[in-house]
Amino acid sequence: MTVLATSQYGRVFLGEAGALKEKLQRAKNDLDQCWRDVAGIEEPVRLDLFTYLESLREEALGPHRLTVESCYSREQDMRTWFKRQIDDKAKRLNRLAGDITSAMHTYCNDFPAETQEVDKTIEAAFEYQKMLEALQADNLPKYEQKFKELLNQNTIREVVQFQAQLEKQNRTIKERIEHINQSLATIEYNPGRYIELENAKTTDQEIRGFQQQLRICIEGTVTGSEDEQYAEKKFIEVSRLIDRFKGRPDSRDLDRKWVKKVTDVRNWFTFAASERYQEDGSEYEHYTDTGGKSGGQKEKLAYTVLAASLVYQFGLERGEIKSRSFRFVVIDEAFGRGSDESTRYALKLFKELNLQLLIVTPLQKIHIIEPYVSTVGFVHNEGGQESQLRSLTIEEYRQERAEREARVL
Image (tube, rainbow, N blue to C red; front, side, top):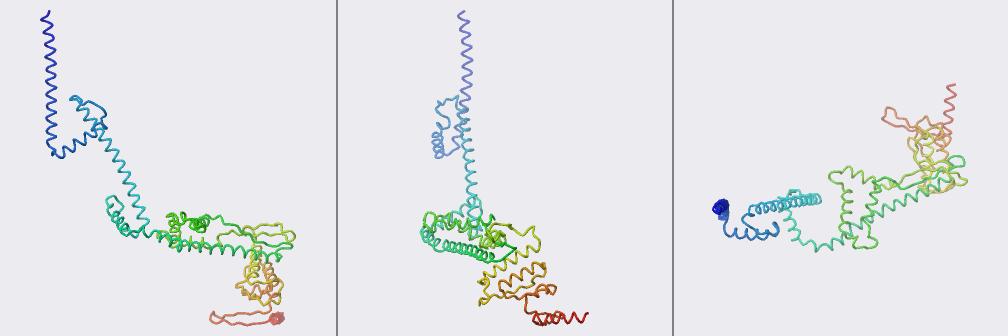
């Protein structure tokens, strides 16, 4: 019995001994391979690598006891950790490269003349480094205060004066409308009623945007706020406005139209006309435009506003017959397409205002104009080569017309 047990234990020990021997051989083979790998690396490099790997071991693998059995697994863990680190850093590098190239594009767009031959790639970074070194060598920061002073004294001051000129025109239009309304109040547009012009701020987004730009550019100028005045943002706003006035390379025609539109102060208003009772000033009808009105109504309203404007322009006083003020008006192609009623209204109105008229009109309107003129001039051009003028007093014209009619009868 004892002999049998000893035999069984012997077989177990022999089996374990064989397994250990095989395991030892594998370990020896692995060790030999490791020595061969290590031997392929120069000693100074090997020492640096071992030192570096040892510094990362705890971070990568955490606290552990390295054994022969765990070497392979730990190698795989280390490899996985390094791959994760490499992937993370590669993503960060890609994001950083994107940010850098985006900054390059922005810089090149802001300074096209200085960067027209520079690529917008990471490989061209040395070109930007050279530009930076040149700027630093020029010591531009020492000119910053001088630049701020010039920005304030010249550029922004010019913008302020420009804005003030536009506001002056704005006030002038309002004052002129007030004066014209004073003249309109004395003109009977319809029995017992007169016309009053009205103006309101435009809702056009381009014009309102331009006005907002001007306000941003001059903010802080009056109060002397240095933080606002000399900020880079202020310079950028002024520069953006000036660039559009000069015309940007890719939109010169649009900018030219924009400048013409926003700097014509008349476009800052929307105009309307209100027909009111002379008795109490209450409104009878409001005209936001002439749509829906007949041709005669449109002409009548236009003649009324024209007459009031002439009164204001010449500085006339209603009913002053002996005034020495200039009051001569030339109306070319007058009343050619207008109705007889609106023509009579206009001529009567001009007569009441004591305006001196030279009317150029086709012959078909002579019967309407006749009661309001003292002299008639007939122009004849035979063959379109030589014009001839014959001048008659209104009495001479009437006499010749009567004689002509009598011969026909």
